[in-house]
Structure formats: C-alpha cells, structure tokens
Length: 317
DNA sequence: AAGACCCCCAACCGCGAGCAA
DNA sequence: TTTGCTCGCGGTTGGGGGTCT
Image (tube, rainbow, N blue to C red; front, side):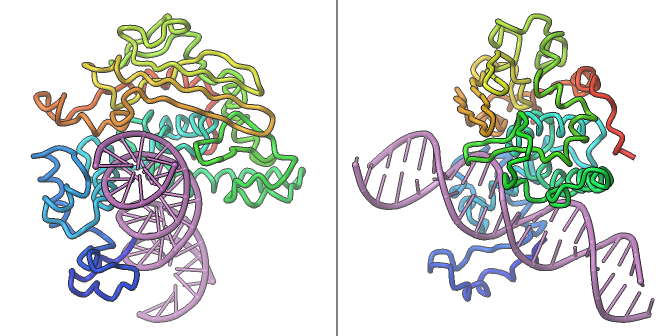
C-alpha cells in the first residue's frame, strides 16, 4: 500500500521522471480517479491504455490504469476471502502451472493474478512453511525453512510438474514441501494433471463434457488443447475453460499450449489464437455489451467435484 | 496506552513479446 | 533490421492496520 501522491505539481521532484512524466501520479488511487476510470471504461471500453489514461482525464500512466482496472475496478471481480474450494484450485493449478499467476487466475472466475499471487505468497507459503517446519523435525532439510525462495538451489529438490512461464521459472518442490502436494493428491495430479478429463470436463456453462480426449475444443466445449507431459512423457489434455471465454466466440479462443518436462526443466510454448481475449477484457464491451458486463462463467462447484477428489486439505482450519 | 513487530495486499518495477513504422 | 511503443507478466516493495509485548 502506498500513499496517494500529492496531486500533480508536487510530483515534479521525481528524478526519474522526464518532463513529460512530471504530471503522472503514483501511489494509491483516489475514489475520484477510480470513478473517472470506471466511467471511461464503461462508456468506451478498453483501448490503448495510454489513450485511456489521457482521455479519461487521469494523470496516470496507462500501465497504472490497466493495473487498476484489472485488479480492482473490473465489474466481474469477486471480493472477499478465498473459499476452500478456490484454495484447492489454486494449489492444484500451481502444481501444474507454477507461478504463472495469470493462467491460474484465468481459471478462477473473478480472481486476479495479483490476488492469487499475494494469496500464495502469504497464506499458502506460510502454511507450507508451517508444515515443513513440523515435518522437518524428523527430516531436517536445509531448505525447509525457506519456502519463500522457490529457488532451484538444491539438487535434492524434487522437480514436480509445475513451474515455468516464459521467464525461465522452474517450479520445484523441496522435499519439505512435498506433504502439502501429497496431501492434496497433487502428486497424483501431476502425473494425471487433469483428472476431470478422464471423467469429462466442463462446458462454459458448467455442465459436464463427457468426451474430452480427442475432441479439441469441441463445438460446445470451451476447452483448449494442451499437451502436457511429465518427465518427458507427453499426453493430450485439455485446459479448463477460461473464465473469459464468451459463449459467442469460444471456439475462437481455443488455446494451444504445449508443456513438457524433463527432469530439471519445464518448457512451455503457447499460442493464444485470440490472446487478448484470454483475459476477458478485450471483448467485454464489444461482444457482451447488450448482455451487460457478464463473463462466461464456469461453475466452481462443478469443477470442485473433480478437484474435490483431492483428499481434503487439512490446513484450512 | 504505547511502541515494536508482523502481515497483507495495492501498486510499482523491470523485462520480454508483439507489432508497426 | 532497427527502433519505438504498448501490453502483459511475474517479482518485489512498502505502508496501513492488526497483533503482540
């Protein structure tokens, strides 16, 4: 949390600011700024963010406007604490995707990558740390106490099916962290990353899709195709529908992604056929204008039918 | 009551990708 | 091919508020 910058003219002293940036505010957003941005977005939809900043009469950089909109002002955002089901999902998807927060967020309706990242870095890491400290009394690990660093600095780390991102992230699980994954059956899920696939996935409306494998994003199925392999093996799986996929253009939003692992690394390449829409923002006001600001939703409860096949995580209490 | 400490989370930062000129 | 711009992402920071002593 940062203090709202005193207004405009007092920001001149920022030595990093060029002349053109002198007027740009930083820090917390005021209610007035929120209102301006909200009103502009509702009336005009998303365009070039620097134009948004300028045209909305905001003394902010476009980047800041984008962040504020995505993380706070978007009408579809869910508020409040994460439910246990959401926690399970986050852990599940983190085991599969690593720190690719945006991809995890895309699978959690109404949640932002920032929110999930913060939640992971505070709550879940803390729990992992707690669990590891309790388990390390018998199996002391020099890394057990440092779950905050996710750094691949120990050859004993178990490379589990996660991690990645285009930035060379390597998701590894130190032995001390294994219980949290094991407890939630995530090790099994790493070997069988989307168990729901065996039993059918979900359409955008939350109803079950019974024939997934081999039907790449079938006509009614909002799944994109993903190839995931573990430890060199590859298999076809389907990425759950992204929250933003509208019912009108879902087939155009299919995502093709290849993820494969070897013993030490995680590789991914993805091809978002309509990448911008993956965040669910680009077409809000275009396709959905008449329907109000709604997003394609997928039923969390239905999803949890499968995710709940994980043994319940005992750290919710 | 007051100071120290801790934690959460909003927002910033830096980087890479994509694209157009 | 290079340059400049925008966007999106993940990592990090630091202030506010809660808790502890």
